[in-house]
Image (cartoon, rainbow, N blue to C red):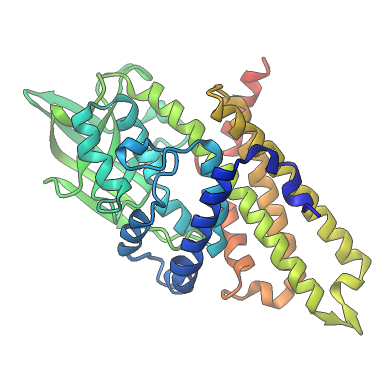
Length: 386
């Protein structure tokens, strides 16, 4: 019998997706699960994990195969997220996945030489890449960023700061969005900054409520000089490319929300079937059965929408409004289902060795990262003509 949690989404997947899922599951079980508890406590994942992931073909599932990526589609990205999340850490997932937001600008706008230099070493796990967008004074309002790149002969000189940067400590290279003119949207340009450049520094390692296994940093650029060859695309092309990147990032966050909700439901169900109270298991109480039924319904709702959006992306259909809807829906459901899972587990659900405890904290990031829920609603409203 097909599980209701997969029946509405299985039709989107091919044998190739299933084989990829099996590969991801093997890597998660053999490499990630044994270490994740310690990495969560340390709030840091060893850099060697990127190398192991690269060797296993686990980095960049949607990036071009000719550049060392998986060459897959948006559904491969969903499968990758679902299986890596089995380790129970949104932070580890976001760290290993930071190249999926750091490299698209180079893939789409970069020259062949730039792609060979800055894409292939990352997909192989030899280098770690981060995306530098958010600033202390410019979060969801990307057009308000102030980091500036000024042309001086054959170089650009970059000054400014970035914050909340995933993989910012591990990063060997940062794809930085900087202002090259005062035009709010047309004055933004991407550059690759190597983290050993004079004037670049990690000014602060940031402590987070959740996503603890990922390193998150504040970055400073103090007269960082980069050659013109480090500019990605022409001046002023950054904003349009970033909007394309955001669409994929929002789908990835929706997928993470779906995975969090499903794992929390499954762990709560397993616990409720075993835990006894007042002479019977928790599933013997109608209130628990109905709570689990509602949780399962919410999981299916989030997955059905997210998979439908991924299929649109696979077909090359632009769907920024639908991606925003999927992100908001999955984020809300992840928060609700993880909360209910903690409630079913009771005291055990509040202990840091359980997945639902970690995931209930990780879920809180989803309505914030990649554009807040309020910004998503603005995108949705404009798409509806409101």
